[in-house]
Length: 166
Image (cartoon, rainbow, N blue to C red; front, top):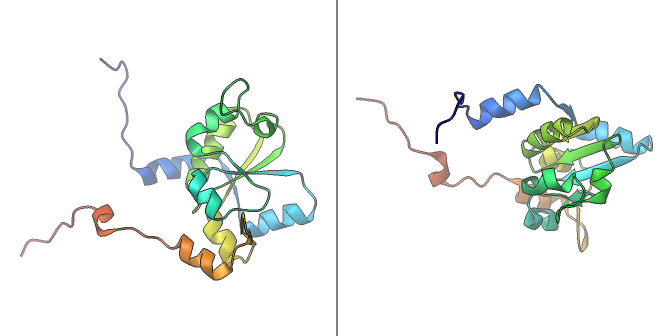
């Protein structure tokens, strides 16, 4: 197979920087203000279902990033009616650290969503700002959420270590 146009290769951080230029982000205190002012806000959590089950923002809807595009349209197994009908509504997209949500908001904007925002800092920052997180058993302890959101990068995930010549 031949590709008719050259593909530019970017790192994850390059793609994230490019996407952040195209999306609007809100900090937790901005969201708190919107909620206090009574704005109708649809909160979409794009993490995986197992992450969402552990802890989430109350009343958020889980739409994993991998099915976002079909969740936004009618007539798919993944269709989420509240999301399909939210193109002119304020939509806050959240993830753990605020990266997946940036890419998700970029996609939503391409699909015609007029007021989609990424939660800058993600649920980590939400928790650090002392905003409540819940699970099926009720409110999650802030300290438990801190531990859950800690980075757990293994040595293998750090990549090869290049040593300096002697």
